[in-house]
Length: 361
Ligand code: KG4
Ligand code: ZN
Image 1 (tube, rainbow, N blue to C red):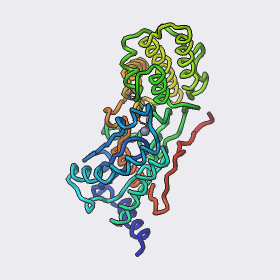
Image 2 (cartoon, rainbow, N blue to C red; image 1 turned 90 degrees about the vertical axis):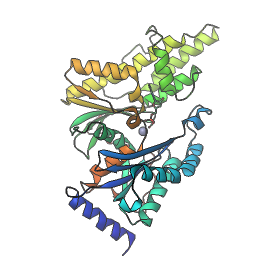
Image 3 (cartoon, protein in one colour; image 1 turned 135 degrees about the horizontal axis):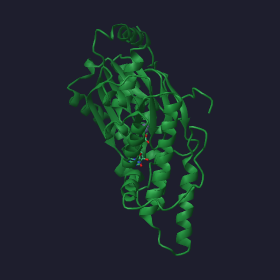
Image 4 (cartoon, protein in one colour; image 1 turned 180 degrees about the horizontal axis):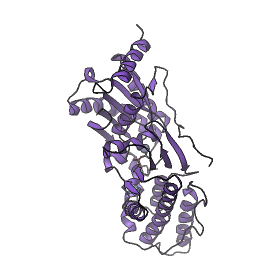
């Protein structure tokens, strides 16, 4: 039998028997600067989640350099696999399917994970499951909150994405709104760079903001009014112009106040639109994901405003907020049990993969 036939037979067996049998998925994530491999049991139990971060390598360049990221994924991935299997106490013989992020992300970085996953699936004659990275972020919450079931709203906030998503069921994530230009994490990183605070910018700006006050107004108007969309490029540019102007006039830049004011405007837009979306779609639960979910001010504000409006706000622990393979394994599991996601040896990286709008923008 050809590989495709064997993989399809095994996949169909999983689809038919998932209620009777434990399913172990080996998941691979390499869309940006984290090489991660996890073993996930039945979608919600993480047996291992090994993450090899390249942050220290990219720090000296002030941001992620795509070619450097691909090369480092290549160097790390075999060891990450071994460590992940060892930590889980499993061998490839125990694995039922191999899942991989095929988009969105940096194409060269994604290609390393996709090629590695294809090789493993072929060598061990296992079904190959393709996973959309953005949906993976949503699924991180199924691991963090074992009782969580759709429908709910998700807010995805990372270096690559900013989106409000309506998670209708385990398969369907409809976009309600997203950024029309920069992602929120990207704006944090850029503001940090211009202030000379380093990379990644989010944690440093978050920390500095606590020492400042919201004394500067960067955007005099509401961000993209009457929509659930965001535009962080305008806010970012306003901050940069403000800093440049002070420097040109030989004045000192009030770093903490700039951080605090930028953060208040950026996060307030997230909170305002997320709560408005909950009201419109009658959602009682919001699950947050992505690296920016680490932000203290976002956590406090969204939780507080959520409580005021009778909305339960969930945040995963940090390790599941930033890029990791466990969330990819969870997303793959819910695809498999619904008979979705099977890929073949023609699978390639799809850097621009996105979610679809359920409603007109
Ligand atoms: O999810 P993630 O690890 O990678 C992507 O998929 O992009 O998110 C990384 C982003 C970076 O832009 C980083 O600056 C931001 O998350 N970040 C934060 C905080 N911690 C990380 N942004 C704001 N506040 C934080 N505490
Ligand atoms: Zn991500």
